Structure formats: structure tokens, C-alpha cells
Image 1: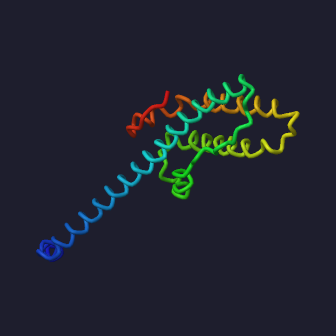
Image 2 (image 1 turned 135 degrees about the horizontal axis):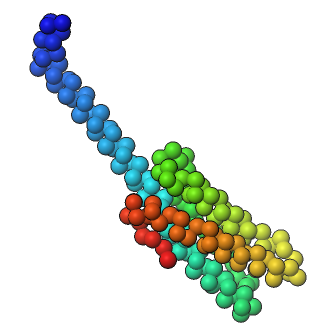
Length: 159
């Protein structure tokens, strides 16, 4: 036992052990920083989408009121989600399921926009109401749900 202890105190062994421990700690710190960056990026996109969708809902409501809904749609961009979804395991577990639901709903809105051309002209009023109701539902169901995560990762809270 004493020989093993003397061997472990050899300078080259000590340097190797310290080097391995340092490399491991640096690896852990790097992984944690990547996880934080991943969550901040995803939450920043969610914050932006919530702000955009709320504004779009107001705009669409005015278009309906004015009878001017024959406008092109621009789908809601989910570029960050699209590029990060393969690493979903890094999403903070406190909001992962609500984020998945949110992005599913945004995809639904994008598909709903594309379906407008499937409605006959006599049914566009029905489409307009369905679309407005869907925008209102997203706002109702998701606004405020991410506030703790926004605070934790220092992301602007939409209003």
C-alpha cells in the first residue's frame, strides 16, 4: 500500500491527475454554457414569436373589421427551433413540454395560413374567423407560460 501511495505522489503522476481533473471540469463548464446558450436562444425565439403573433392578431382583427383580408401571409419563422430541435435533450425540463406544445401550435398556424387557398371564396369569412380564433387561442394558452424561464435565462418577457 505504501508503494502505491509513493507512486501516486510522483510529480509526473500528480501532473497527469491534475491535468485530467482540470480537463474534466473544463468539459463540464463548456457543456453547461452550451446548455444555457441553447435555452436562451430557444426562449428568445419564443419571446419574439409571442410578440409577433400578438401584433399579428391585432392586425388581422382590424383587417376583418375593415373587410380587407385578401393579403398574403408570411409564415411564422421558427429557424432557431428548426436548427436546435435535434438537441431537444438540452431544453430545460421546467419548460420543455410547454415549448413543444407551443411550437406545435405555431406549426398549426403556418399550415392554417397555407390552407386559406383551399377555402372557396364564399367561405373565406369562415376562414378569417377560424384564423383569428387560432391566434387568440395561442395568445391565451401560451402568454405568461414561459415567464419563469424568461427570467431564469434573462430573456425579454413579451407583453
